[in-house]
Image 1 (tube, rainbow, N blue to C red):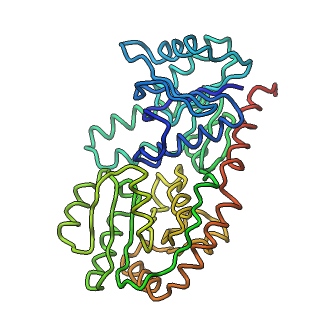
Image 2: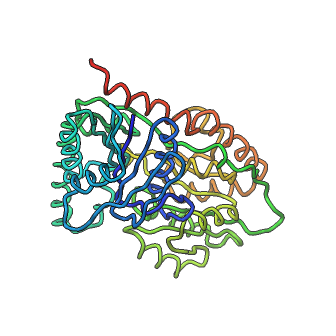
Image 3: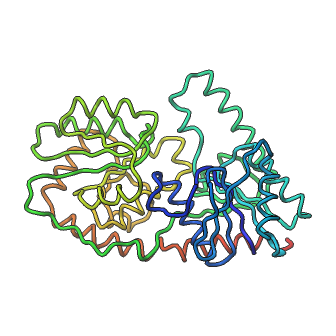
Length: 375
């Protein structure tokens, strides 16, 4: 089986120099799948052909040609789609993209199956736009959601998303993974330093409880040595910048690549992941960030983004997005350094037992294969 993935964002295959968690996920997903199939990624952002083992990234021709035609040129030029079973996959549900990918499948007498991997909702990105723009964008993506039912299958992170999208096509509930070599041997132990650094790295958006996080730090304003470093960008960027200027215990450090984030995490005492579970976006998104956090060996304070009994052993969990209670939880953590070490150790075992990429991707591959089996 061959797999061709359309990406809107990738310009290379080195996950250390990308700057968003979605780009890291796209690269790791494709690399994991390439252990089972020949995988090609096509992107308008790519300028050159990149290759890593069985994974290739090809640039698309952007000279006023349709997406279907641009992909067809890549297929012909690079001798792709020679297998009798071929998958074309896109992330999300943008109408124009899905319609163009469907054209690819018809060009090959339906030996090509079209899949959407929908791991997010457009709702979060438009939350802070004007009402007029919000209505227009919502209408456009609503058409894409309706078109989803005409393709062959969908991969999601949450079963709630399948119900929300009102689909009747085959689906798979998947999750993010981690490479075992990316689970660092580092075990957190509190140093004798009186400083205690919190780190948040991610999208500056309301569903990530940025307002709650800033208010939490105001409760900790008089606690000497406790600081919060924030990395990322998003609709609440200006709010975060203003907060960092007004509060000496908050530092905004911009959008940096994955390697810089890794270095920042290494210096942290506690990583923050306060996803609002009641937000609409939470019906779609899987907390891939929490997987990266656990792999670092640094303890994590999070809302209950994963619902299993072992999750509480791997992280410090708060069930209320209440700034005062969260600040009290942070002070409790500061007073129990041995508990941080326990979480650090268990989080690694938790990942190895449940989230290694080979275990995550094998059901994805089998699901794709079943699409070619007559029902």
